Image (tube, rainbow, N blue to C red; front, side, top):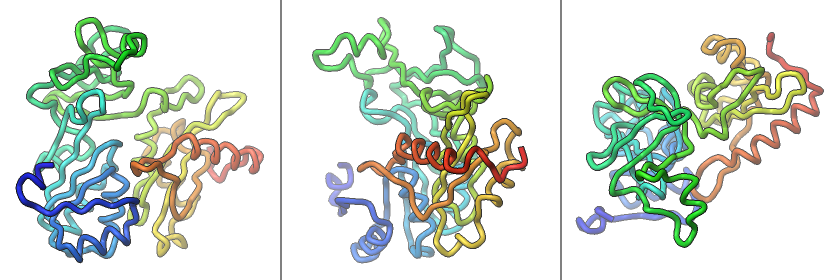
Length: 298
């Protein structure tokens, strides 16, 4: 809304399509773009290269660790703005921009001046660097769900802390790092594996998006699998075997995917976020078809 209040032009898309977005940006001579990280990555990998884009804002999901450097190599003077929050925190609770982005490429920033953030596990506040649930408190946090005190009590403490359902940690400077949705953590033989860590290990030039999921296994409970989207021009080069070897060079052995499905695109909801349930089901079905056989050497 600040754009319209300041007399600027605001172009909205009914449905995301990167080719349409590039066309609109050029036609309307737009200087900034915003959306979820998937959209930001697709813009950076599009033929918008060299366009004088001044800002890209993104949020709603973790960002690939290579993205800030890649974005600046494509748009020389772009300012990257990453935010973290949810409807219950009036959208934004933490943000990062400017030179902080390349300095902390996987962080979603510092808490807003009015927002307190802490990391908690089993009711205990954790020290910097320790992973737990992200809790948020401040005047921007909701008092509760309308006419639903039972649902409110499940996510808001008596002293006003909102339990986000996200796992993460804070560094010694107070920068927040998102690790996963707690419900999306993959548990393989007792080892907790953050899907974001696996996804970041699969990113290389040509990979547009990666989603790591757990697939059922009778012995270990879950195995790590992933589904990635790759630029059409790179499909001959970026194969399942290549990606598994890349992951093996970056991850401990228990976190290396047993299967990586390479696709042109992934299913998304209307907000542009990957539909993890559908992706998880598709991965499990493919694993069954393969009879539990992997190209991984594990």
